[in-house]
Image 1 (cartoon, protein in one colour):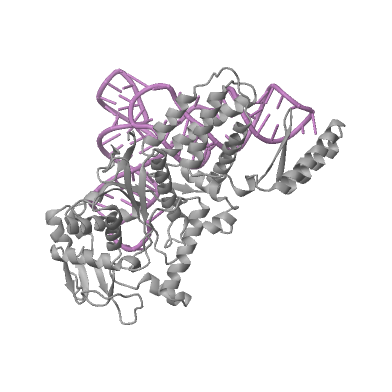
Image 2: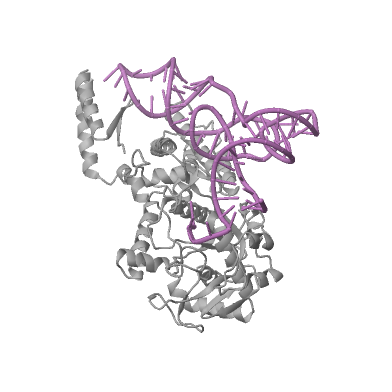
Amino acid sequence: MDNNLFIFNTLTRTKEKFEPISKGLVGLYVCGPTVYSDVHLGNCRTFISFDLIYRYLLYLGFKIRYVRNITDAGHLEGDRDEGDDKFEKKARLEQLEPMEIVQKYTIGFHDVMRAFNNMPPNIEPTATGHICEQIEMIKQIIENKFAYEVNGTVYFDVEKYNKEFSYGMLTNRLLDDLIANTRELSGQDEKRGRLDFALWIKAKPEQIMRWPSPWGWGFPGWHIECSAMSSKYLGDTFDIHGGGMDLQATHHTNEIAQSQACNHKAPVKYWMHTNMLTVNGVRMSKTAGNGFLPGELFTGEHPLLEKGYSPMAVRFFMMQTHYRSTLDFSNEALQASEKGYARLMASLKTLDSLKPSDTSNLNIKEIEKKCMDAMNDDFNTPILIACLFDCARIINSVNDNKEKITIEDIAILKKLMHGFIFDVLGLKQEAFESNSNKVLHGVMEIILDIRNEIKLKKDFIASDKLRNDLSKINISIKDTKETTIWSVEQ
RNA sequence: GGUCCUGUGGCCGAGCGGCUAGGCUCAGCUCUGCAAAAGCUGCUACAGCGGUUCGAAUCCGCUCGGGACCUCCA
């Protein structure tokens, strides 16, 4: 299978031609959420970006195994390898069992993904479902002498690892610099090196989420689950591993080290990182308190929001920025996208009723190539969308009899628009725009019929009143030469 | 302090050596009973100062802003 796709690889900091390890097949792993609280919009941006990447790979004809994990154990808060387990803490707070917390927020996460029209991954493994695999991997790392056990906790020996491999390769950092920026070990520390991190952590007596291991009762460290699950389902070396940029320095760096120490192979060929979502120039995060939940965004119930925005408008808004650029949120920007999105979707409707001519004075093939070129250049959706707006302009011009198009070109244009808008960008008609409501359609037909009769009698006061009244309940009416079209506004 | 990213028109946001995306806003025009929609036209920008080059928003240097990671976070 031929493709001309170039991907920006974090490992080399350059765009590289995408050559999958096995022809036609792609292994894709994305770090999923830690389900101890609601996903916020920043998290969503990452998953929407990778949904686009997944969709475009599908569009190119690849067979893909897309794995995205659910972290449901082993995530500590505060300083590394200390502090409370996030799930246990939240469980106490909400007076629930830790696994009830996991269940509650997993469901919530899936609901939000569905609202954004994200396709589900092919495999969605959980950390708690792969304790055995993680233990086996840790045993192998110990056997390979890159980890050591102290009092029921197992640590990864970073300095030892760095003698054979480059620990800081993913972020282009030298070990000495990293060490210099880490606080000194106190007398109470069990670990030998400042950068050492836990693979397995001894459970506290009161802890519920615990499993037996060769080192006693405990639970896995955060990083080991991704190494264990990605190699289980995708092999020791696979094509693409993705996640947010904030995971690059610690989580992904440790993942590489674990896999390398266990299998003596680089785990991933292309590392991809998506950029952050900011609000007024500052990164949206739970700790900064400037984040809002998807639900709040849809309803507009948040101090930062002037109104609610539909999931598809938000998705379109995100697609107008490249995945490696920061995306700054503002009501103004979101409203601009909302309008642009409506215009694009309206043109799609117009496309269905376009009248063909014998000749075309347009080069549709050329536009199609521009769309492909944009996506092949590291998934450049802003340029793709610019091309789609060119199509919208063409459609409207043909509709106004200002341009001509053949029936063949209409077919190509339809295929192109539908392919990129629905399949690649993952947008869909919002419920209120769909034709599902037959009663409403029937009623509107009757009303518009009556209004036309009134108009023929030149009773414009009555016809305008009808239009105004309908507009009050969000139904807008547009009179064209031949007919009158209506639509439900958001 | 270390490793990086970034500064583009009223706003958002591509481009990253020559052909000066796109969306939204605003103004004018065409169409129209009016409105809306649509189309056309205009407002034509690359933080500042130097340098390289026939040519720089794009490469290099400096200055000034903004941000990320290095501590849990997509």
